[in-house]
Length: 416
View 1 (tube, rainbow, N blue to C red):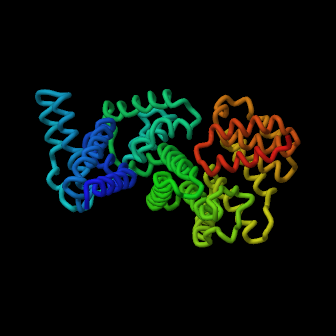
View 2: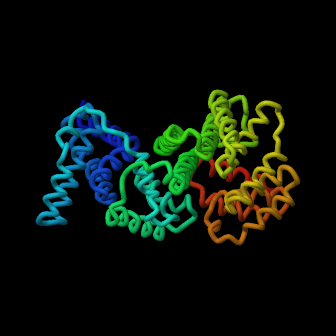
View 3: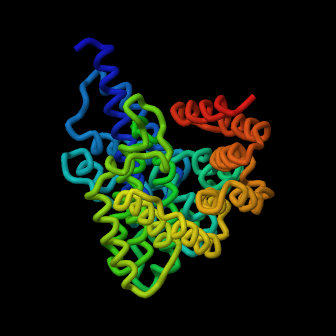
């Protein structure tokens, strides 16, 4: 193998390790130091070192162990530069403990769930817990997280830095909390998994490896939570809605790679095994005596399966569920989907009235789905000039080329 081929393989292996092992390695390091920022910096340097070392010396048999060893050595270097005296000796000893074992092929324990619950500790501001989980455990950057929470990247970045400092300064315990402490933290953990899946779901065809891995990671973490809390209806509901969405992944692109919206998908392409698993989870959740956001969203996903069974959409049930979800959450994102469902049931005029109810929300100014939905409804009511302008904004905000082409075709089809 020549150097270029080795370099390409090293980049590929390091990239795969970064995507699949990031949260696991951060959790392992933070469990021993409580210093999230230092763990992230050390891992970043370890990935950079891999790109230099692996082309020259070959990819290691256990990339995770190699990266962990380098990262812990980097953390020791950081500690030497920051501290002196007895404090430095104590921290260096803590970091160095087990270093040699980490370089072996031994299995690295997966402590991501513990890290997620640590990030949801009551000492951390409620509104930043889920974003913190997304960055620390799943490796999303501030811009991606800000988009998911309809916030500016700079404001999100500042809040994340403060939260990481809080973990270190407050000595927040790194462990899955006792059962009686779980309710206060579970919401943030589920919200982070939900947002991570949403970010991974923005790639309709699964062609973006990083986003596909993120969606798969969210489903994996959802399964972990349901194993930890088998009688928690909201965790069951979240896993069900993700599985329902995953079941439709193959239908979201046609044979030419073009985006296909839900209402135009062929239900025969949906994954029946995932649908059956999701339905069973919802049945179990419904038997546990409480209802919440994720169960309602799972039920919405389930309502679309009606079309697979009957050949006809059940928009009355979809609207009813969106009404309940809107009342529960007050989310403008729910408001967008509610307006689209109302348009299917009552006509585009009613949909326009519904979307006007949330039009003043400043968080939607740069939110692509709002402008795409608005354009679609305006076009159906004959307001073609306004629809064209809304499509223009939606196209400018869209990241996925296939979805952008879909919007451009819709815009081009408007009467002059």
